[in-house]
Length: 298
Length: 233
Image (cartoon, rainbow over all chains, first blue to last red):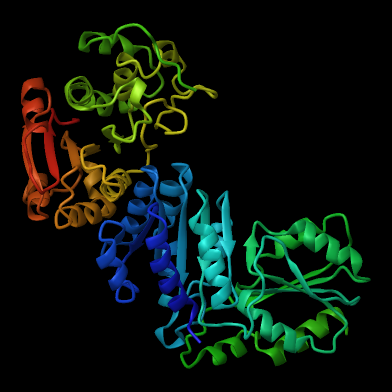
């Protein structure tokens, strides 16, 4: 099956043909995949070179003239390196754009920490007005990219090599995949399959989110209220605890506990494969089962 | 939000009076005055934009990247009728649209907000790209930076890209008041030239020379004008 990044290339290439407002700004990464698109739309596919501040500034400048820019590179170079540009050129100027990242937290473990951005969502949380999508499957990525292309808002689409076997319907609300009384487990994006395996046979509600910002507080409140236990475990493919405050705010009127699982803060300084890193962060199905069952006393 | 005036535009000789209405940012007084003549020549004789065309797709765009000490900029905008001069005394007040750095969502006629140096050139590059992509090949994009602002690496990403990209709708005015702390061996003009820009260097107080430099043809290349003024001291 094609990866989310492959699907991003194919979908954006199609969207460029369908929508004259759409522009794509690259900083060398993925440029080979967009060769055809660049030939067909030389003014709307712009490779600025290895210049990430310009990647965001140029995208924002195109937005100032009324275009809808997609800006793309690895997560670390897209969000972290030019973060002031994200804050000012998009937010402070009041224009919209779509940041599309690849690489995530552990897609290229042998590449090391310079190519990992587990902190990207948490960084964007310090800004106002960002929609954050974390698709769990290439079909979801495609749907979310198509949706993002039509708006004027600020959107971050976080692609990963990690994928669920099946695509789920996308939408702003948390979707309920299982219902139980022992607590609520929120699976974000590609963490879903591991969460489903981990909670097999456990009496828990499982909610799925491919869109984490805006956080569906009302959906969580309903699910927690419907369960005998309002305790929540969040399983995210980026920095552990990123959404813990959101869950706490959602359940402010209900006694509850929150466990935020995700990628650790300390560098592993280990290479290998994605599965090694998921295990190291306690995010494989076996570790998740232990941690979830332990926290919820199941 | 638009508070345009129906009175005829004021002239260069009114700018001193208008600037004196804005107090509170005296530290950046020299930064403001250094831009005055370049701004006036641009708005009076070069830029094809007016209070009535601030939203026109085909307008020329002026981006103030050197956002500190914006008093000359506000005075010029007021003189040209983008907003009423009655706003000027409120400069820096809590609910004034005129901050010590401009905000494009608050200042009528401002294309970008600024304050953090090095953002205007990349935004201008993007604006030129966006206009070209929509077939709007006539409007020009102008960005004004300071010489010390060219310390910022982000400015150089934009300069290096724009030349080879042939962004001939893009124009930069560098107000050179020798503010930079560190030497720039070879000078400012050379950096633009090496990157493939057309470049002119002029006396930043000579209106006629500025006009000639601003309007010099530069087919196929972006254009930079280095406007020299007295060192900040």
